[in-house]
Image 1 (tube, rainbow, N blue to C red):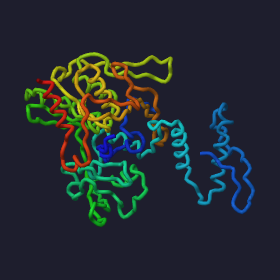
Image 2 (cartoon, rainbow, N blue to C red; image 1 turned 45 degrees about the vertical axis):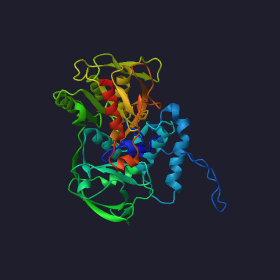
Image 3 (cartoon, rainbow, N blue to C red; image 1 turned 135 degrees about the vertical axis):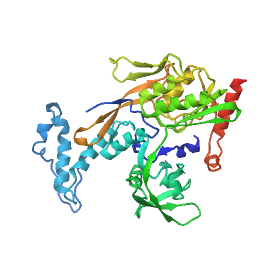
Image 4 (cartoon, one colour; image 1 turned 90 degrees about the vertical axis):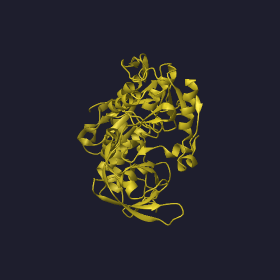
Length: 420
């Protein structure tokens, strides 16, 4: 597997991506309203605790058919409140922990609980705006690591560099702290300051004060390359992505390019509807993706191309890598199946499942539950399989550090070969 996976560009603002929604991105395809007790003796030969009665009132809230099933849960709840050494315990934390454990027991990393803060971040990330330092980060190592400061960002102004590790935040050691929690600590209101203790190769750790500001992350980047080739990169499938993509395509096509490179690398996904809209800019007609549900009585749902796409005829290739997931794979898979474009890069992540996000009552966060899986127009599964490019091209850490992009070079070559 390409070592550059660790450098997938994950927004410092987001990333549910970082809390289990994205081990490779997420798609909010739909949006709806809405631990075992070990019976061991105590040290010192104190007696084993006898089962406790279900707490008063608990049965009233438990459905009749589940009272027996939930009896051990309420016994445990009562034991914690009676016996745990540090009292009082936090009922909210216990409740959230119980929900997290319940969903984790399903063994699906995309089905999980989001606390209110994580749920807010998940929605903020798709809006493309947030308050923070403005940096792409790697959240897969022992420490949160800067991949690249965004141009014009506070991170760039503070002198942060690729490879910098965030060892402390405001003097608090981050060793062993989950990346999503580190990100929350780095984020903060515009105008406020955060002091990051940075570990940089060859230097002793040092403090860097960074003044946060409001960051606007563009969904789309575009430019003309040599050989009269248009280049368009899509960073996310958010609410503003389609109009930004249309504007970029109009600008590029007005220059009469010979071909188009569409870059979906490190794009972890977004909204399903946006994926269909994006694919429709390149595909004239036909099914873009099919959803198949776990309930066999529920008919699969197909999503068709929307007529009127701007770039349905121009020769094109699509850049993908291990960070291309979910909505990116829907678009790339459709373009590949129809022979509309060749894929260049390395195998994609393989996130082809559908989650329903359901906000819980009293603003207690939300649960994300997998309800279906996606299939390409040729009925290929995406989930845990991914897409294999026709042209394999890797990008190593050494390439990245040297500001080389052999994958883009390979995409240009593949497109020029097509044009011949």
